[in-house]
Image 1 (spheres, rainbow, N blue to C red):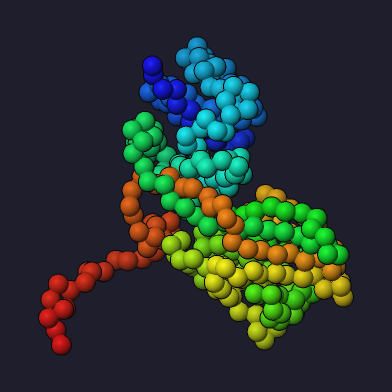
Image 2 (image 1 turned 90 degrees about the vertical axis):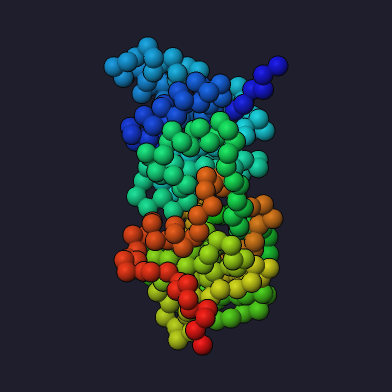
Length: 318
């Protein structure tokens, strides 16, 4: 009896090129006897798009064979998620599959697309590698995030890139105290605090002046945003450390918590945000064993002209 295989397809919504690429990917998966699955909202967009195409019959036939997640197929039946878009779409897909151990394979349709494995022109190869199960699964650290108000946990979530405490009003400064390993470190006024994973070190934390941390390094980052303090440098701490930010009761501004720019919670004066390494990592499917150095050079278009590599005779020199 032939095994039924299911692949979740997640695309950037409201972008025709992403929906068209999703339709193409679904067609290739179906041709390889793999059943594509989409969320209800994305499936509706896919079918609406297919009906408007010139080759109506062929496109519509593909769209009608895609199953709806939760209605015809559960997360437990999905072997992999194929993500078509930029890093934001990958973060959306990570949110969809959070409760299941499903690897994410990103096909970049955005700008930098740091989390993506391939570009648009590599779609055919990516589908073939899915068919052959020819990919490597890598674990990426995630964050466990809790909001505590008056000694009671009022919100609990997670993040792949970062948890950010920011001021909610532009004209006022947020007064906070930062804690590491259950000891206070410093208090100051600022625009906010970014607490990030190594994966998130190339996202918001990078824009805020934080260091780039290789994904293989187990560490947590804390990066202040426009802090009014003598000691407000980015910090790299051990992964077992608990980082916390308290919005001081004297703060003129309220705060707001953002996790990966997708999940949010308001922080009144006195609120506390605790961030730890999550027990559940995010899984990324990789097609090749490239180094993170190569990814940095490629994604940021770093200049490396003139590099000759190690001198073969250097080991013989004194």
